[in-house]
Image (cartoon, rainbow, N blue to C red; front, side, top):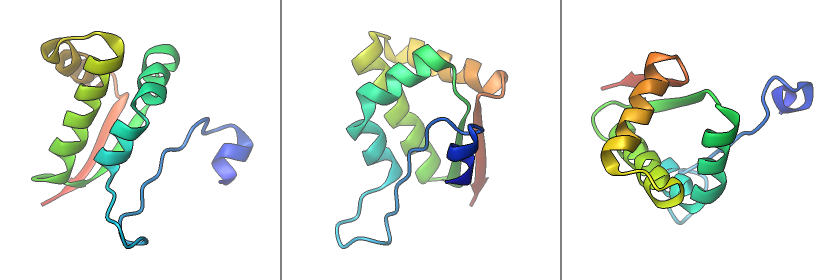
Length: 99
């Protein structure tokens, strides 16, 4: 929370799947907070950092972001995927993965 207090980080979305009895993963939280997240993406131009398993987790997270952009921004699936590719190209969507 030091980064939030210092202003280096303006918003933090977290999901801890191992700390609760009901399993809730990042992709579920993305869709749950979709309206706020899509607004934040479109209005603030954030850097999104995702970390996880390359085979299963990261595609699900990316798909959830695509769905949120479709639902709340009026993008088509293709436009949403292109938007995320542009974020990747401009270092605004950063992936840390393992297999």
